[in-house]
Every structure is written in structure tokens, then in C-alpha cells.
Image (cartoon, rainbow, N blue to C red; front, side, top):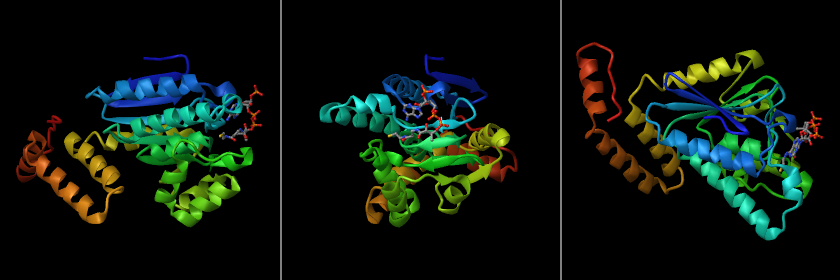
Length: 260
Ligand code: COA
């Protein structure tokens, strides 16, 4: 399913979602946000798709942020709506129930960095630049950056980025844990797909529950989060995947998971 601004390719259990507005460095206008949200909603209900790669079209940018021409026309009420739509998209990515890998192939600024933050993990090309330049426009993050960035890299590093608005390069992003690894530009999509493919070999229910345990658990006090982990652990024992996984190990063969 391709739309005006989103290219979607599905192959062998993996979906590659490309924001396709390269003439504006894939900036997130209302259409891109709506079409990305539709795309992720559609992927959520496709059991055959088990992991997703998110990237941007062209050589320069992953996503260069929210569309500044649209922001310039917002009053406070429209700005709140804009933020809520962007935040809803980040939640749809975060709660997809399948791993989402951001393949950051250039500028990931503002909303672009925030979408990457909502992904399960991030790979960057050597030319990538990541940042939250909102303060340079006299505004703050609206798509979750003020919350997810400190949770990922820590308060001090996040505040340096958020308050200066200065982007960091791929090597620095790697050093502070903002990206998982850095690869050559031409190898980026291949590496992202290879990583996505690793998650096809393991139990689908276990992948889903692991995402639930980590993502919901991080927002709970530790004792509550441990209860949540035990609940999900227990639920695994009602699945065919658990029976197959343990039996296959004991029979010294590869498991054939069904996702049930
Ligand atoms: N919103 C709207 N349009 C954007 C955009 C954004 N966030 N980012 C880039 N564009 C547009 C430019 O206006 C330009 O359009 P035009 O050719 O019609 O004039 C086109 O994309 C190419 O961008 P350009 O600025 O010419 O490329 P560059 O290589 O000189 O600079 C950036 C690249 C990323 C440094 C620069 O585009 C930039 O600073 N973008 C804004 C980043 C930002 O502040 N994002 C956060 C928004 S909250």
C-alpha cells in the first residue's frame, strides 16, 4: 500500500516504511503524519509482518522535522492539536507490538529525531545528524522528545541537546547511546533489514511480550514493573510457542513457532 507520501514494501515478514517527500527532506506535514499513522495501524493488524524498518527517501534526510511552514501558521489551539497528532503517531510506533528499527539515513531533526526515538532501536548512517532544534525556532519539542530523549540518553545529555538545539553527528549519537550502531550509508538499509530478520527466528509472542515488558515497565515503579514482568512471563506458559520452543530445544532441533 503506497500513499502520496509513504512508500510501503513488504517482503518475507518484514515491512520497510519510507517517508517519501525528499524535496522537503521528508518533513512531517499533516498528510505525512496521517499517512504514517494509517500505515502503522495497517501493519499492526498484519500477523505476517513481524518487524518493521522506518527510513526516509533520498540521500540527505531521514526526516528533517515537523513542517515549519505548517507550524508558522499555528495558533496555540492548532499547535496543541498538532502536538497531539504527532504524539499519537509516536505511540502507534512504540506500541506496534513488533520491533521497529529506525534506519537514520541523514538528518533526523525535531519530529524526525522524535519518531526515531519512538522506534525500538536506531541504526544510523555515517552522514546522519540527529538533533532537537526546536529552541532555535522559539518552541519546544511536541512529539515526545522532551520525554523520550532523557529516558534514552539521560537528563544531562538530553538537556544539552534540547537547550542548545545543536545536532550531533552519528559518532556522538553512538557514544551517548542515541543510536545502536553506525554503518556506511550504502549498507544502512541492508543492515537494518538483516537486524529486522533476526527477530523472525524467535517466538513472535515472546517478542511482543518483551516489548510490552520493557516499554510499559519503564514507566512503572520497579515493584509494579516486576509484577507486570511476572504476569507476561506467566502468559507465555499458555502459548504453543512456549511448548514448541522448549520441546525443540530438548529434541535438538530448530523450533517452528506459530505465534500462538
Ligand atoms: N519543514 C519544512 N520544510 C523543510 C524542513 C522542515 N522542517 N526542512 C527542510 N525543508 C525544506 C526546505 O525549506 C527546502 O525547501 P525549498 O527547496 O522549497 O526551499 C528543502 O526542504 C531543502 O532544504 P534546505 O534547507 O534547502 O536543505 P539544506 O541542505 O540547505 O539544509 C537542513 C538542510 C536540514 C539543515 C535544513 O533544511 C533545516 O535546518 N531544516 C529545518 C530543521 C528543523 O528545524 N527541524 C525542526 C522543526 S520543529
